[in-house]
Image 1: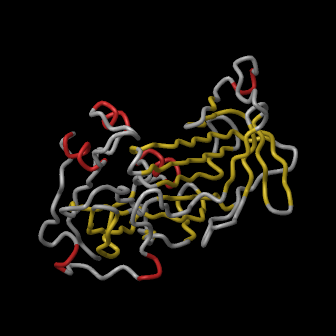
Image 2: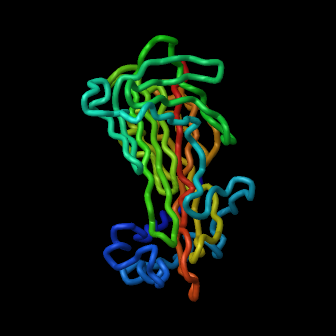
Length: 296
């Protein structure tokens, strides 16, 4: 079994609110980098035997290194959200009282009706929109959820757009959770985005009946905007008997005490270093995201 030291994550505080407070705007002559430096951004250097040039781990394959900079993402969600009319999510619609819909955020947790097409399921949230199965742009995807035409499921959908600053671009995150009923069995679950992080432990426990331990899969170096970075990508070993290793960014079938699932799970940690003299640019992205589908 491979052993590792878990590297420290670096979250550069490229937050629009902080940038605004420091005077960053589209009309400023100062680069976004200077605003971030004023905000006290920490630059973490790689430590010995963790990442990068020390070569402690095998190199990540060149055909599966994942995104380097925001807004690039590793795609894990084969879903497209299609909003309904302009009054979607209005407070007067009792079917969508748990839904909000703005230019930068869409969130909903409600019962959805099921329509099954030749391309896959469509899940409609009355007065809010529909979630349509869409494999376009996906290199790999877990199976679509097993649902019945004319039936219903409980759907939790979330989408957020984040503006870093006028000079640095932005990024997004999305998540989908489909249950057979409110509070019921998870049929399909996933999350993608530049900074989504790892699957929460509570979700791991509900899905598999156990949490996972990180094992280093590979290491790489890269660059993004004004930063170079060292990355560790991780496998996940589920604490079930017998133990099951879910390999980084690999489509797998996992049998756990709670059921059998198709799983695609990626997670990485990055240590970043600022490139002296650089003006501005995007942030470093994490090669993280996951999707899980219950196999009937």
